[in-house]
Amino acid sequence: MNVTRRAFNLGAILAAGTVILPGAVRAADEKTIAIMFDSLQSPFWVTGFDVLKEKAKAAGYQPLESISNLDDNKQFEQVQSMIQKKVSGIIIVQTDSKAVIPAIREANKAGIPMVHFNRPPAESDAKSSAVQADNRAIMKSTVQALVDKARKAGGKYKAAILIGDLGDQNAIQRRDGFFDVVDQNKDIIEVVARISTEWNPDKAFADLTNALQANPDINFLVTSSDFLLPQIQQALKIAGKWKKTGEEGHVLFAGFDGDEGQYAALKDGYMDVGGVQNLFYEADLAIGAIEKMNKGEEVPKLLLDPGFVITQETLDQDRDKMWGYAVWKKANG
Image (tube, rainbow, N blue to C red; front, side, top):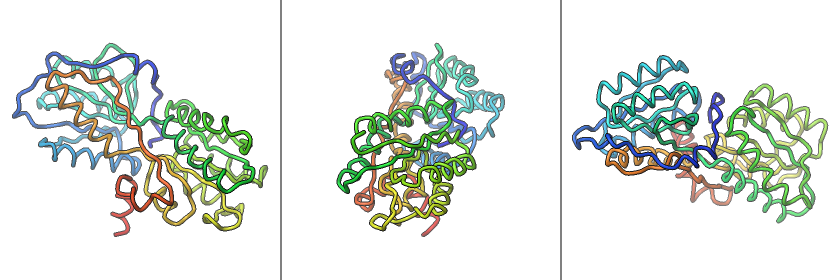
């Protein structure tokens, strides 16, 4: 998850069909892939960068790296440099969904496939593919799992959701996935707080604290991103609600992303359910798309990661699929 993600029109991308680059059939001995990120601002991007490099090497490519430091002009120059090096493909995370379009066109002219990693470009006639988590579907499955726990436990629930920046389509899709489920379960769940965090940790803490004061009976909480977990923990502690499953006052709690904080919260019993972006699968999709386009095969404009849901009960068997577990394990031995 990155707080600077730009919005995109999912429906428009899906409707755009497939990508095929007629000039993209390349010689077998050209075995380099450019991995171009705009920043390494969060564990998600750091891990994604590392996983892509590992996957590229495993597929027989030498990864060439670049970081643009959130500078679109710099990234465009970096793309031109990679084209001059005759890379076999470009996997890119751009800062701005529109500013990247000239770079796509440059790659098209050179017959070099481009794949956008977890951040699709704006709609245009430029040809590229994108890998993206199916945010709405993952959130629906996550919230449904939390609702199932609520029904099993019995009783009525006062719910709160921490919503991201509504200028970010990822945040909108996650919000909509939440309401897809709770709107069908109004017999036990009443949403009493819709907290617009704008992906700002300080705002998230302040507004969640206020919501807990105004609604001290909140006992069902969903966050649209795990990166807000420190602020959520702090707010719940102040309210006397940071309790483990089974303890009196425990708040049924679900996260989204699958970072190391989510893993730790599930392991320690504070979080009940987590929605996970399958970063390893997304990397496989990206490398695979490059290879298919280089063979002249059609590739969809958007490749969706269905993600998965993990719970306290399934954590031990599924944790190796969590990118956040890999981060946690590296930090904790």
